[in-house]
Amino acid sequence: MGSTIAEKILGAHAGSRPVRAGDVVVAAVDFAMLHDARAANALKMVEKLGAARLPFAPRTALVLDHYSPPPNPEAANIHRAMRAFADDHGAVLYDVGDGICHQVLPEGGHLTCGDLVVGTDTHSTTYGAFNALGTGVEGTDLSAVMMTGKLWFRVPETIRVELKGRLQPGVWAKDLTLRMLGRLGAEGANYRAIEYQGPAVAAMEIDDRMTLANHAAELGAKAALLEADEKTFAWLEARGAREPSPVRADPDASYRERIEMDVTELVPQVARNHQIDDVVGVPEVKNQRIDYALIGTCTNGRLDDLRQAVAVLKGKRIAKGVRMIVTPASRQVWLAAAREGLIEALTAAGASVEAAGCGTCVNITGHLIPGDGDVVISSANRNFKGRLGNPRSEIWIGSAATVAASALTGHITDPRTVEGGDWRRISKAA
Image (cartoon, rainbow, N blue to C red; front, top):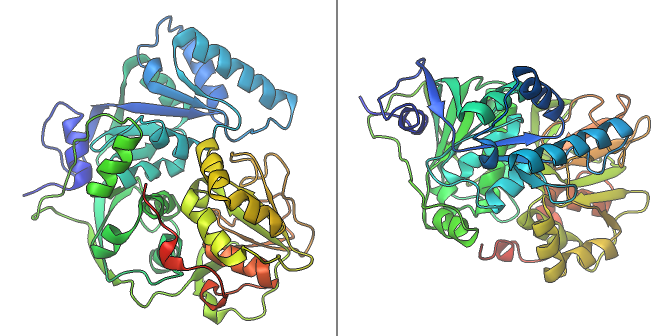
């Protein structure tokens, strides 16, 4: 019997031996990430264990992205400790404003096809866009990785998702992931890997593939894995990544479930009612006003997302009474957007463009706190009640294009109905 991508990667990192779903293995990690919201426990555990040397620290990135900028002295002191730790042990440091962990790791060339990557965030599944097995762990797990370079894993079962057809102009991976959530339900893939395959995936640019892998966290997935192709190799090579070791599933691999979906007729989607799996098509939503619009986060703060927004908003002005905030996923994305004129176009349209970071997504920095009864449409990954600091407000989730179109009209709007740029020119070369 053949093997899935997850089985192959974990087997290769556990002594190059065959493994099957359900096996428990100790596997060598290729790269690790610790962000500031989980750093305190990890650093305390290192101190408690009295580890004088941390051999894996140079292959660990410490990312200051959640408390960015720090909203209080406690957060600022965590940052001080992380900077000192990086200096002492030779860890990679991404400071305030450098960007969100899931963006800066691949941008920094820290991972490649076939790798096993762990990070202190559920959205570490993002790295599967590059044919790597990325998964979330706790801060105390990271302390063990820095000391040994290894961690234990239970090999997950895999759901194979075959995506046929091609997304139409104005419809994006965000809409597809929301549709998946509506079909499987939040946590519908708990502790399972998802393999996304098919012509619709092959047609996606890297930014959209990262969204596809990232949102698997809302499904409860342990990992989301895409096959590598020439787009993958070119993107990684441009960022100085190591030589890729691409992994494909065997034709006779065993899957927990097989799902086929033709995406050709898919329309823009939104999640509502404080539930990420309460998903409907945007055309079904009529006259739902909005007060705030947020574009950004590790899910949809990449360059193509900003291009989507500008395709809608360039030369126009957002609706009266709407406040719009844009948070690029990294400093590199911010600079690229500035070079393309995207920052100017968004600012002229009435948006506030902030430094890269996670603070607005999870209301750590307090830059977007809605009032009682206010409605937010966001390209973030979650719409939990109170996520933005006020449980008496409402959060809808959609693509960057849907958020921009809604900001323009003042109510949730299908971006395909807004006169704007040419959707076919959104995704440029890597």
